[in-house]
Image (cartoon, rainbow, N blue to C red; front, side, top):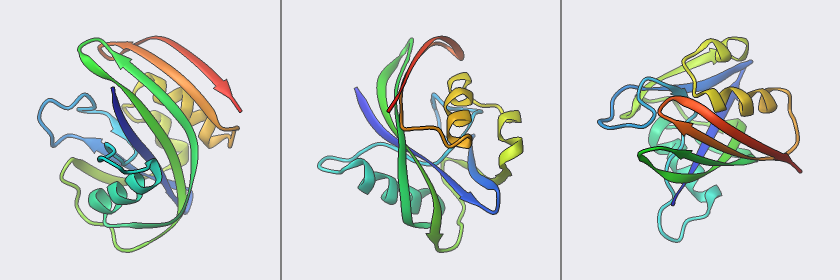
Length: 152
């Protein structure tokens, strides 16, 4: 089971989104997602998201909030726990990302992007500022087969 992080960074009514279009054999290829990545040995989710945001964007998170936990499964890929964060407090200058194209997208336009079907569900909760969530997302290829959600 993989463990990773995902962050939606907000600035002036926009989210920093990443079009995954540069890595080989990427489960997210062609999809728009937040930034983040896998936990390293001995690292907490909070340490991971701060490190990953710097590595992928050049930005330094000064405040962030854990919004939920995803359990992601898809045929042919290793299951994954994903800790989801948001942040609107950061410093630094945006840099080019090795994993794809970074772009600030108006929050009203995010749902128009090529997203995972399950991302549309939990992003709505984030946009509506809902309570902390836990969600299981089960896929076959790009098709969402099932999802179960809990709020705390």
